[in-house]
Amino acid sequence: MDNPVGPALQLRIPEPARGHRPADPVPYISAAGEMRKPDLDEKVERIALMRKQLVRVLDDEGHAVGPWAPALDADQLRQGLRDMMTVRSFDARLLRAHRQGKISFYMQCLGEEAIACAQRRALRADDMHFPTYRQQGLLIAGGHPIVTMMNQVLSNEHDPLKGRQLPVMYSSKEHGFFSISGNLATQYVQAVGWAMASALRGDTRIASAWIGEGASAESDFHAALVFASTYQAPVILNIVNNQWAISTPEDFARGASATFADRGYGFSIPALRVDGNDYLAVYAASQWAAERARSNLGPTLLEWVTLRVGAHSTSDDPSVYRPDDEADRFPLGDPIERLRRHLTVIGAWDDERQAALQTEVDALIADAFAEADSHGSVKSGHTSSPATMFDDVYATLPRHLVEQRDRMEG
Image (cartoon, rainbow, N blue to C red; front, top):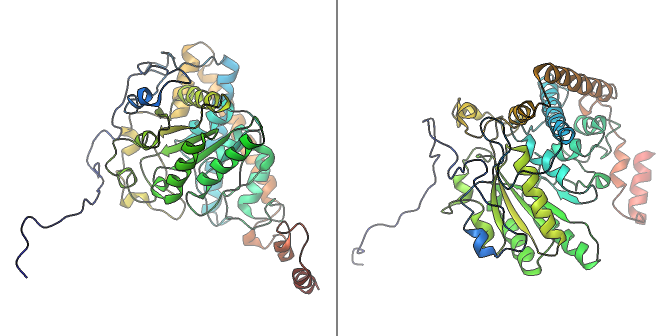
């Protein structure tokens, strides 16, 4: 065979563009208030021109500026601050419980609290969220009992899921929180299907699908977008871009696209990028997407730009692949501090009230954990009966399973 003509073929292997070198980790940053707010029924082609911008409301001094600023009063803002601080304290206590050997596994959402908390407040209580393992803020902002969540993480005899889920994989139909799956991206197609069923029933409830930017490379993500676009399903398609999957930067999943919001345009779905560390921007964008869905205008894709400050999970050591000062250099700051600054600027907050709230929240979490811990954990052997594996599977248990359960109980 003759020697081939031309250069040898090569693959593009994504590498961390930031590595351990100082660089701006967020491209296409817009100034606060700069991005216009489209009409709900604006053509997708016009919205597509905005997908390299960033919806931002809070400026560096803490003022709410621009057309996206939502009409939230001081009480609502203070509640948002409390929600986020509760989530952060909850995470810290359970992370400590893992280090104490009380639980087997944990995943925190440090630095991402605004996304779940603000969207939960922007949507209705009867809407259904299809979350990943980093949206505990949906439950906490929705008023789910914190002790119950801790019982599930401890997998003790008061665990509502009876030890049949990994820690942090909560489930609560009554709080609009679909069961978390350990298989990445499956919740995306489930959310679209649920939204389609809601529309077919003539219901008024919408669905909200959640995924991390790394898992958006899964085929289920793209299948969900096909169905959402084809049937104009009433669903919000959230992509939480926290810059890192388990150990690879967001470049791997994004590929050659400039942003993850680009994915929406490819399916003719309106898509926006939003400052995920700006509580007001998250609330406003979520409210806008929800209004589109309820007006039968179809799905909206929202890319939330944020940063996973902590490890991927308690099984991860981020020091081997992330810069030590990444959180300090992240240009979008800390969501709790930014909302606190805004409340201070409008005269609705001060350092004394902040300290008092922190004390109150920490005491709430400490008391809740003490109660949950009093029921033991899977590690101490205080678990539900193994016979409960037969529960909640069939409406009427088949005869052969009845026999197996009876033998186990006997």
